[in-house]
Image (cartoon, rainbow, N blue to C red; front, top):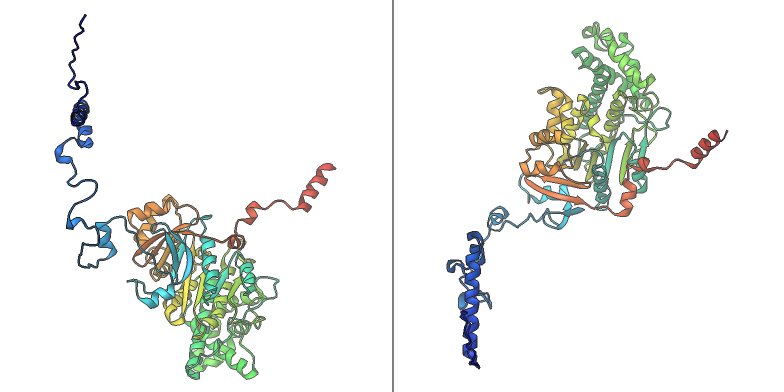
Length: 517
């Protein structure tokens, strides 16, 4: 019985077709399958498949044919120079190239995926960054985010570049071990300690400065120091007659010291202020009542000699400043533990005045002056005034100041809006061309944006920065930098060792013996 073959498909292939016919059949089948699938898909998916002829590529996958294909180095276009801001609009995946390879290595620039180096002196001298007008820097971050490690890393690595490091105040004693490791000098001040500093020591006269002019400069510095100490103890500004009393007492003490060949001392100032008849006699007809007007001053300076600061600033200096030491720190960890910062501030004022002798030397080279735990300074106008002078003269002195804070709102604690302390504190930040911000708490973001002029993206970034990562604002440039530490540095900079410390064997044995009984 003959079987008839019938089919409704279009792919009826007669027996033994030719090769051309088989190829045509396959093409026809593929086209029909593509058309059927396209009709089954939603309109949006149909557009993405490229079935629409208008969405087909203009050139094949092999590229544009002919001489205009840009292959074989046949394309010649004129050179064009543009800024990174313009190039970023044309090609948004560009990142800032960093500050260059000169300077201290800090870590990794996360946007450029390159090494990040920083040297304020090099940046200032090169003039490459518009708006970089001074070498000062401010560093802030919440506790435990690594800001102290960054400050110590900058100090340690800068020594390798020939810089010297000064720490006028070390309230927690964290820099002492680092200074000893680097072959530097540490001066510990506190009740019962042998170290003494005479803040009235005259610095060495720089070369090229007239002797008479230099004596006038030394006298002015001593008067500013005495006025700052008195205002700190009295917690008020000095009256006009009190300024006059300090002026007269200083001249009397300096004249006697020069005649005896010894340096003037704070104890001599206190003793002279306590003798009203001598002050009145020194001014003659203009000194009526001056001696009694400075009674408060006499008692204020007595505190430095016989009060809680006795034994630290009431005698000749027992240590000499070594200008060749790579690091000098003033350890004040024995002071200020009772919650009253007065003793700490007085010690910082005296130590800063003593250290200015080294800063005034134009041949001292480039130096970093680091103010750690600076939030304790913000509440005292006398210290802020001394710091402001140092900030303004940083270029002439060849120093870079580093202000270390927990949060930027610490600057607002200097006083009410418009007060002298508030203006000075905000002025310190304004005179810092470099601002380094580690993670801030959410309630501090608004203050940070107001004080630093952060963008919305930058404000969002500082709220979620992990440990060791900070936002660097160098003049008008911004970088997110991951600080990298060597294992040896981690051991030196560890400030959480007490949190991880195990009880000593002796204490454990005492507890065991107690419960055994």
